Length: 261
Length: 268
Image (cartoon, rainbow over all chains, first blue to last red; front, side, top):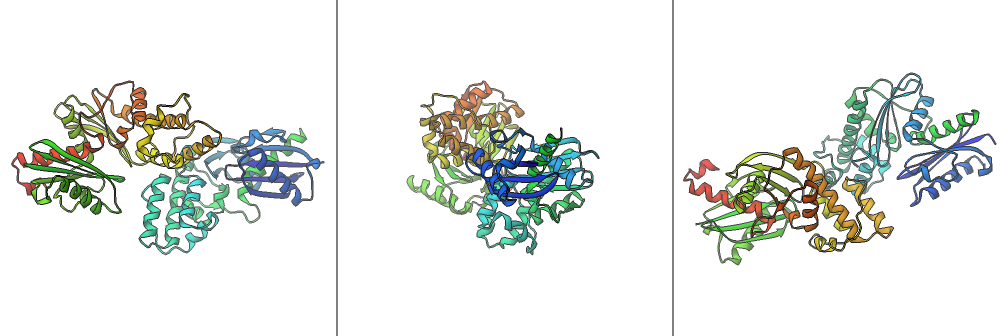
């Protein structure tokens, strides 16, 4: 009975993490469905299945993410900023600055030594600088969004995108493709544009080491390398943890605390 | 004397011919793959309808996004100057010109002689330009030209939570799926675009009279929403398609350059 769940219902993917006494048991990531409640139910069942558990074993559940209010089985909801900060602190106690790039928003968070949030800024107004930008660009290049980062590493030429707006960038990428640019070079330019936007948001909260990146885009090595270059700080890597799960992980940690109280 | 203006935009190309300062005819076509082709086709088609040839034109001024690639024009002028001149010529009382094109929006203040005082424009963000409506039209399977009529059937005021074209498109699709009436969606989108451009206009100051030009000026829903957002009467150019005001201004400048007697080489 002492299992807890954190569930992060995002715009593009839904994530769930199962913990027992702050120990990681299992997780799941699925593409989000049309309805957040169905996404949550599906991803929670999948994560529980991975640990051979069922809903009856769950003592407490915290939801976060864009669809968090619609997760019926949850005991509590928590903001994404709070969850990401909590997970970052748990993974790397030295982290002071965090950038979370999700499917349709981007958040920069600065924390103190206790992991308390000092300053946070979010962009959910403009698709550029969010995972959506990469999704749109990947579909034009006809590659999986997960491949974009690796393509960057194969680039031989650097070119900068002249427009930030996703719509104008779209036209620019099509033009480059038609004039015979290598896909890897274009991909590198796309990742670079993403890193520039992320750096602007990070600078708005002030950067203090260590820096961590979470969310789906954290898995893109091209964006990470460019971001390190632009901000002049190393961005921490995690060998064990899937940083796309950070929101769900933070939610699960909060669930854990809730039973203790 | 015959003068012509050629305005090569991102979505359309426009041409206009003047005879002794009076408008002979004008034409708007969809832009071709490159600005050279667009300019060539729009001007040649217009002239052939008038039984004229490029050699018959005394001077041609080009403007618009592709202005420096127009092969038969030796002189180009900025869109800001051309729209200001065209709007002012059509209404000498013009003090502010709001121009919404396919890929940008500009607000220009002019003095009593039609000279540009200052201006602001947005070409960084697709929302707040004609492209916004184009993308939404595609999502709704509605032609740009039909929008004004369809909006008239709107009965309910809805608003969008997203300004970004990419996010608003998703919002439109989910509204359609939820069964929101198309005229209401279109009216909401028109207000959305108008509020972006109104913010731009406020940043420049909007002294009356305000003339609305560019392709989007033909959309009565946007015009109405923009007038309401700015709390001001918006004028349309007199007896001329608002979409060819840039070409009109360019043609007027061509005439001025000739009449001023200045060395044409120098003007170029």
